[in-house]
Image (tube, rainbow, N blue to C red; front, top):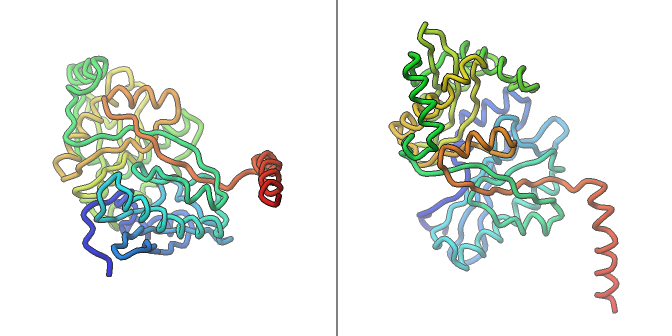
Length: 316
């Protein structure tokens, strides 16, 4: 019998049924809910949703920053019992990922840093980074440059709102993506469907208006009430960037997420130099997470001589 679990690690919000359904529809994936129970008299469990494409390959949905995982255990953090539980449960997940022909990089959520079970199954592991921290988080905890930008935006007549229309969100995401040479792949209809499927407690949209009332910045976050809020998508008119619209946006976002009951905030990645610099200025902690992938042919070629040498030594 699995005992009551007093603590957890992972990205609980990504397991939300409505989001899982939306990911299936939007990206043409098939979701499989799985649960891995650790060995021992006091087992823990690792809950996950694994997505596969039409060819049966496991992949992380396009806009999800992490794999949909939740590790739940009553054992103390940092203790040997919890470590053994993780190694046991994660080994089962690692087998499924290795056998499922993992496509592209898939990320373990922050807090699940022990990547050994995945390396032991032949997957490549790499460290990536995000910024995370507890809520509430006041702008006073950010760098002086952030506070100055917020003051500048306020003086210029910008204002924050705790909702954005799907049309404004799509427009600003399209504009931002085109400027940075990528695409979010979201239509206003996609946004509407997700909001309907998960509800306002999970999907939080936000907007900033200029002095004329036009929406110049819009974004959305995914919230696990009482848990982590993930920064999901964000777009801003380039003409509003120097006025502090983005800084005013995130000051409002932090307040709103705290008011709806989120306990922590996660920027969802900080691995691009320009993006990392902006996110670091808010005063959150730099937080590592692990990226998993199948080894490339080049990596296998490099590893093969070492494997052969080890095999020869073992045979002697």
